[in-house]
Length: 114
Image (cartoon, rainbow, N blue to C red; front, top):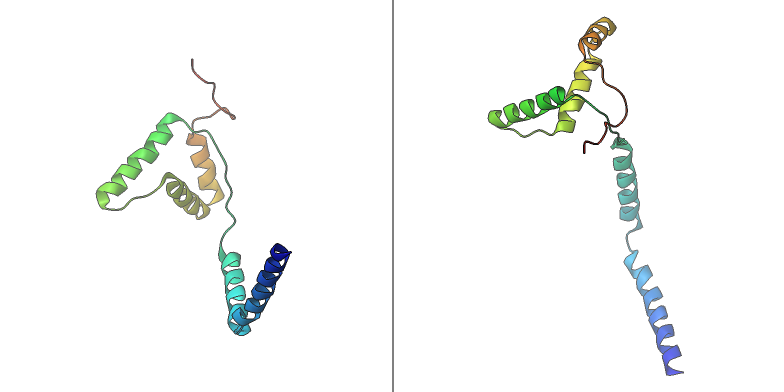
C-alpha cells in the first residue's frame, strides 16, 4: 500500500506545480501568436528530382567555383533558384527561344551502367 500512496503524492505535487508555472498567461499567449506568425511566413518546401545533361551540371560546378573565387559560397539549389527568379523576369518569347537552344533530354531516370 505504501507504493500506491507515493505515486498519488507525486501526482498531487505535480498538479500543484502546474498552476504556479502559469503565472503569466499573457506572455504565453504572445509566444503562441508569434510562433504561428513565423510558421505563416515560412514557405512550403517541395522536394523534387530531375535529370539534366552532364554539360549543364558541369556549368553549375563552374559557377560554384567562380563564386568561391569571388569570396562567397553558394549551393546548387540556390543557383537553380536564382535561375528561376531570372526566368520569371523574361518574356514568353525569350523563354521559348531559350528552350529551343536546349538539348532534348529523355524524361525519367537514366539507366544504371554496369
